[in-house]
View 1 (cartoon, helix red, strand yellow):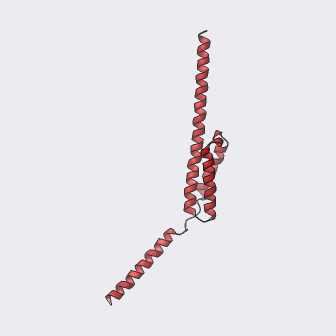
View 2 (cartoon, helix red, strand yellow; view 1 turned 90 degrees about the vertical axis):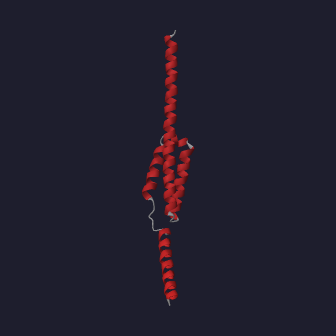
View 3 (spheres, helix red, strand yellow; view 1 turned 30 degrees about the vertical axis):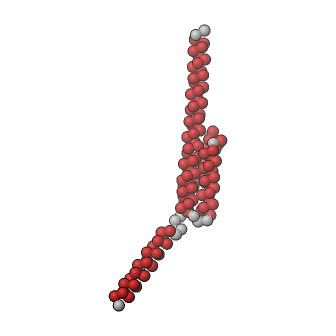
Length: 122
C-alpha cells in the first residue's frame, strides 16, 4: 500500500514536472517585434551612410531576414537572437564607416599640413 501511494506520488510529480518543462519550452513567447524594428531602423540608417558597402551591413541584413523567417515559423527565441545579432552587426557597420571617415579626414588633414609646411619653407 505504501509503495502504491509512493508510485502514484512519483507519477504525479513526473507529470507535473514534465508539464512545467514543456510549458517553459513552448512558444508562449511573443514575436520580438520591437527588437526587429530597432535592428531594421539601424540597418536603414547604415544604408544611407558609407556603411552600405561593408560586409557587416550585409550580414545584418541577412540576419534580419532570417529573424523574419523565424517569426513566420513561430521560432520567437531564434528570431530574438537573430534580431539582436542583426542590430549588433548594423551598429558595427556604422562604427566602421565612421572610423573609416575619421581616418580619411585625418589623412586629408595631414596632407594639408604637409602642403602648408612646403609652402612655408619656400
